[in-house]
Length: 506
Image (cartoon, rainbow, N blue to C red; front, side, top):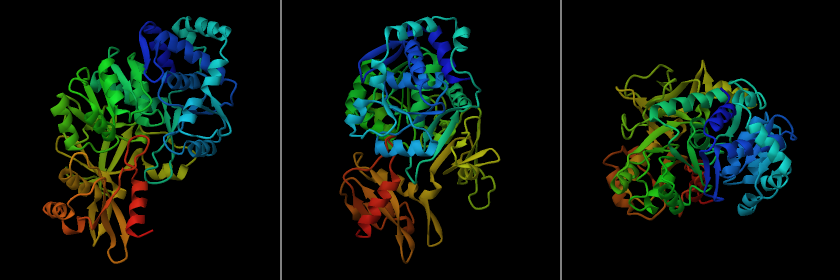
């Protein structure tokens, strides 16, 4: 199935229904108007070079139509992260994927102080160039019977690349992930089934479309079913998001723990009354956050697990099958195996190993990087780089990145485990991140970054009751704010660099 063609089918089926409620620009589009708008942009995009077309737009009706229009014109969207270093990310994407044209917004560039990169075309200028004749032609085209209309837009194969997304770069330079129509189709079909999504649902679309969580959860799942999506450009505008959820009677929300903490602290009882699914992913969901949503809103915060390379969903908890602390069971069509990181043998129940994934959700590969693709996908199994274990009931328990394990005195120590223990001892408004700092004598030592000063002696004493001495932080470093990526994930790379500079006196 081609996803832009599925959108056409849905748009024809639900012509009069609201497709997009744009809370950034205060616009509303029915499915019919969304179809006409995407056809107009598809025609405009045909004048640009074939192949890749960069998209750097905040969540809005315009960004949805631009992505659809790009696909309908036979081009492949390359999604560009504008949250930090937008100009640098644009040039990186252009060089990596060998394309020139980037569709962006003048308003966005002015707001984030992004200089104009060669090849940037402003969506505002494109829309100003739309004539009455353009609109009439698109409206006539949109009125054609479904099968005839499908023949007038880009054809292709489900194994064709749907889009390029870049990995977060939380540990090293981003890689270009090629996801196919088949990859994301597998994901949304399984998610629709497991969560009983219907066209009556209203999905909050505030996760950035340059992130896979946003692409699948906030675009393709709702568009493929006929839901209404409520777009808002800034997931960090916590109070406004809570107001939107209440006013628009949102039923589905997905986000990172960082975002959900913000919503919890800035919400009033009743704000989440309409929601039936609250799904947390991208980072470990703290027990305190789950407890907070239950106490304040009477809502269960479900945890899921995925990766950019897996479109993204791998495992999910559901209201019917929920094991708090785990990341859930594999979705339909996805196999998960844990493998001993030293012997390569499959792990037993409860034994920690590398998490491997197989299924139609696994990416085509990293763009123009055969070596890294070969290292990451072996015999059809994608190596997530994460560590975890399965319990007797098939629930997966994520214990951290393999790179967040270190050897001290010959023993393996999980930085995630240290964080979990420390987190439970800190006040709810204090964030922490545990990192490795090189040590000339021991090889490595553990340092904890925290966002407020604490009673270090008392905290270390309590940690020693739950952790061996080699896992106790040697030092606490106070950082006013924990650096995060645009996706809401903790930026381990930046935090580690800052902590090492502080500890080593640089």
